[in-house]
Amino acid sequence: MTLRSNRTRVILIGGLIVLLLAAFALVVINRVDIVMDAFVSRTDLPEPVTAHYYEAIRNQNYAEAYTDLDEQATLNGRSIDEQSFIKLAIDIDTQRGRLDSYGILKQSDDASQYSASLRRGDQAYTVHLQLRQVGDRWRIISLDGL
Image (cartoon, rainbow, N blue to C red; front, side):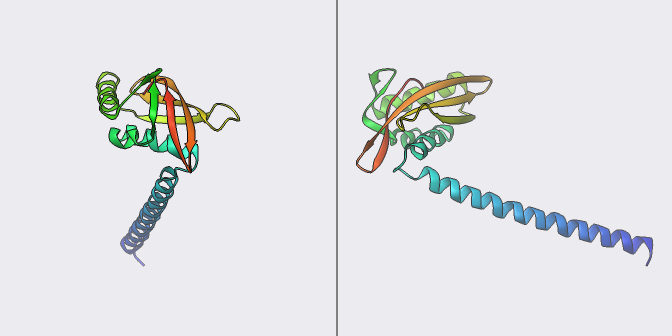
């Protein structure tokens, strides 16, 4: 075998390995996306409802985020309707930047108390949320920020 044919073989094998790794990565990413979608679609547990809310905010789908709020939900102690919620979310995105990332923590053994660590650009802050179960669905009843 010549040096040229060995080099060609190495390039072909390397290319095949890269293609296989790329295909594997796509399968894994697709599977993670499916599992995440299934998780945030659940309404029978408070954690997925909170995650769904913040995923909608992160994607700037404020009407979808509003569906996770209870009919009597309060923001900073005041009732908020859908139109006001959407306007406020847009204003915050304009002032502070889009929601880049979030983390959700249960506050105590009480399943209804959560805090969310949010990051918008170089700003990080915490929002406290309270949820309640209505029938078989959990909803956010109060929060102290967006």
